[in-house]
Amino acid sequence: MPAAKYDAIYQSLRHAIEDQEYPYQSTLPSEHQLTQIYDCSRNTVRRAIAELAEQGYVQSVHGKGVLVLYRKQEQTQFSISGVESMKEAAARNGQTLRTKVVYFTELVVDGEMSERTGFPEGSEIYYLQRVRYLNGEALIIDHNYFLKDVVRGLSAKIAEGSVYEYMEHTLGETIMTTRRRYTVEKETELDHAYMDLQGYNCLMVVSNQSFNKDGIQFEYTDSRHRPDRFVFYELAQRKK
Image (cartoon, rainbow, N blue to C red):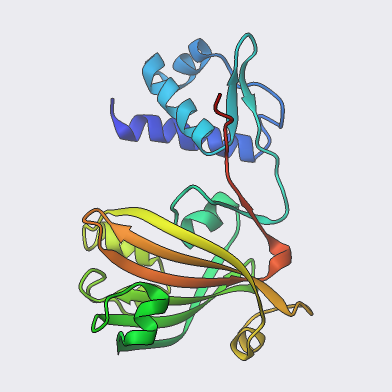
């Protein structure tokens, strides 16, 4: 089935749910109705519904239909189980994103950095610091390390857009897997200088190691978030 078709239906239904056209605990139109609305097959509709279910927006309930689980919140919501760029996350949350690169350099990984990031010693990397503004507030600062052999030709200008978009659409790279670690850490001088902390003295830190389709680690990132403005969630199902 054409990926563009089911994805377009998924995006349409997701936006309708987020805009409260289908509020929390309501049900989506039936499969038959959706095939008529979108002029497509049942299989295409089912694929779109499966994608919504995987992202935690809906759940199919026997005898009731497809129940909406999404509930709008003020905090920015990040999926623990998904892999998405900050640009994609901001768009999904209906927020305006601006990214400012405040530091950009090239480094060779030494022993200490290798231990911390997972890159082999001697690897050539880009290191940058990016401040993320959501709806005008400086709420995140990212410390990004990108492997030069994979993220070829990276510049500060590209990094103020979307590095993942550049990798996928310009370099033809396939981003496959991300390992994450979550910690709470005290603010640093850099956090204090660049972020709108509003009196908070600690941050939620998400550390990512990301790999391409060849299993090569191309990124290590420490993403430091103001703690009151973000929710991290995961969809889990009980197995019997």
